[in-house]
View 1 (cartoon, rainbow, N blue to C red):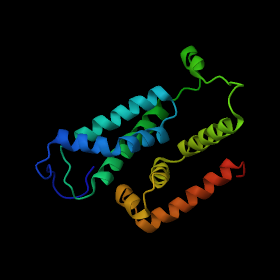
View 2 (view 1 turned 120 degrees about the vertical axis):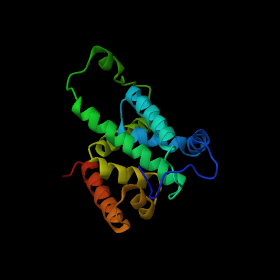
View 3 (view 1 turned 45 degrees about the vertical axis):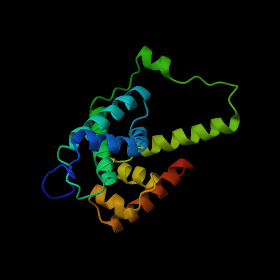
Amino acid sequence: LRCGGRSILTGGWSQDALYANAASEHGAAIARVARGYEMDPDKRRDLNQEIHFQLWRSFASFNARCSLRTWVYRVAHHVAASHVLRERRNLSTLLSLEELEKLPDTDAADIEADTDRRRNLHRLEQLIQQLKPLDRQVIISYLEDMDAASIAEITGLSAASVAMRIHRVKSILARRFHGRR
């Protein structure tokens, strides 16, 4: 993962200091990226840890030719996409008893509006997770309020291609969300 050029630590910052700064500024965004790629809470925690570890490791080659934010998102999406590919290879259709016990129970005391909101959010997350890794990366970045130029810098696509991909993915998600093909 490079933003171009040779590898150096910038401005006298150590690898630990760069990581601490990035984790402080972008920790919540990293958690949201992990949530966008992994539904299972335990696996999501592991993915979040792996992203942080790989982010720390990546600062050994950070060269400041892109913004810290762009670097963080590149690393996070790269690690998360690798996680998805590993999980797909290990996919099993059967649930263990422990996994079955972890499935949420329906609670009649929940407020109907909150239940609907959670159901819709969960459904949207499931639809996003069905996307190919690049499309998922683009839409998750878009949902993080990144513009097409920033997403293009992260993904290596052109800004025009990113804008078109965002439009197409939003249309597909909307159709699928509302039960239309």
